[in-house]
Length: 394
Image (cartoon, rainbow, N blue to C red; front, side, top):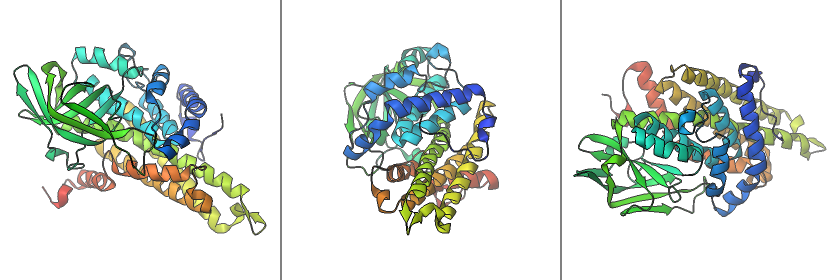
């Protein structure tokens, strides 16, 4: 196992033996099976073959980690799930994104808001990697402003007719099922739309500068007719939507640490080996300052994620605390990627080194599941009691 971890404050001592064992097992698997594939996938913008990899991830319990075993999950706690996300994003953001989409954005709402029939049908399939899912929320004209979504679903007897477009959807072109959110006369509702349904199109979007090792695309609905049984019976309104996003934000809070750690380790090793003016650049004061800044911020991010994980396991984490962790830890990863690229000099733009790839990917993660501005306003409203979303007070 190549990567030994970054742990300046002995945070490992806070984890149980089982939590550490799962993290190490996942780390070893990813280094052996997936990490060698990432650079080529990113460079050529040919996404990782998740049809092949998902069953392996499912067999290890990575996809359905937090869900009960009766539904195909592994039944682990949130801290363990966080450590898994950390290892996934250390390899590549698109890999962690695949898991969070399937686990937090699709399995979670089915488990929380779905019928027993929906749970039994989809949760085991997705958990084992035998079916791939995607989450249809973002639209061409509406990202942060979820309440203004234009996709609509109209009731027609015992059927629903969906019209609209969803864009920047992870796993869009390969998904077997899409959890789609649409406006109805009853408010915003979630619908399960299966691949091959008439009026449902799935398109891959290329020419991206970020998340190139993952599938990202568009979902189209043109008089797409689905059965009434495909609507999530319990989830109504924005509260249901945001509960799913919070699951993904939790994974990002941990995953971003993985990207930051990888950038830090790469820069540290390079600085010790790279010689200029007859000495390693690690002996230069300005280089040491940058390495120390990275390590300090990673350590603070680790402690923030650890405490959030324990709060999640106790059922006490608030949406604003999730926003703080996502906002802070992504900023840390963004800084570490940029700083590592600087320290590598001209080599920093080479895909032979990971920082430039993390740097590109983190720009997407910085934006999705709530932009930095949105998370600032979520925390701001929580501490002041005043909403400033949309530049207005309500």
